[in-house]
Image (cartoon, rainbow, N blue to C red; front, side, top):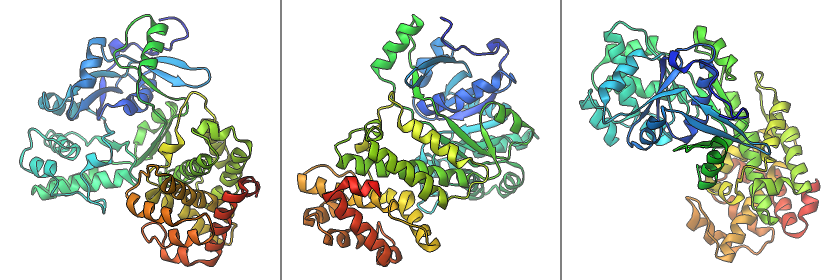
Length: 468
């Protein structure tokens, strides 16, 4: 490869599989596989066996090129790197015996299977009526679900008198380690193996983790870029923003330093990092989306080029949202600076219209909880409510213009939006939605007044609202 292209910094012939990863989609290859690639330069037993639970697409693309692929970091000055940590890709239904053999050898089992891949109820417990779980309870040799694979993998390790592997969920579930552990233990109990359940509870580490990095889908432009740079064909290159974050709860024992050296944050608790991401990154994203759309912006980058809006969001993050966070292991001012740099990345096209989806489900966690705490602590909420008011104006505009509202409450919101005329009475219509606004907050006079002022102001003089 030409010198600017990064290559594995280790002898790949000496690498050994020590990680089994379920769900080798684009995010894994841009994220965890990249971290394991960095670990391999320090220790040869951290290579990955990637396991697809369903489809052969990744196997068919990567196996002919020895598992190698190109990762492009999207930035003003893009960087290309060949990642070599994936030594093998297996399609689980085609070769379950090989998967079990790898589970006997693994130090770590990681997963990116999306939230639905955990087969949980709305309360976060294992759904014993889920078709895959019901099937796996009766068939140990050919599991379908992630839970079935982990449970049987741990069962076989116990029978072979091997220590439990460490299982790390890398999906966006709060308390994902705790939920995965509970699901596996409940699965073992449900199939009558209580001794295994007790062994897992006492011996198997399930650290929680948090992951973050925008990973756009592979498109033809990326393929052409990689083809031109490498001078050969890559069947499935991957792209992501330069920023990448992986926080893992400190249940890694002697390996904690290996993870740290690779750039992983090993923390005593992951929840403060999750809360910071949800409020500072996602809360700011929602405010940018709804306010930016109202000002004619299309992308996050566009919104950050609106000087008043960009300054407003930064002040909200540094002065209002950060005040609601207690994260002793996270440098909050530096974290805000890095988020703002991500927002200003010209190479990432993040549409505000997409961020605006499902606002009725997101507002509570991204903004309303911060507002509730600020009210309780006597802190100002003037900037915090602007994103809420801008959401109301966005819904009203879409409804009156006949635009699409992508939201589980789309029908109800469309009806409310059509009744709006831009005046202060509109706010009461939205605050009457118990699915969005907790009753105590909706009845709080200071909140109602602040939202109403922001709502009316965004319609008459948005620059004045953003200057506050």
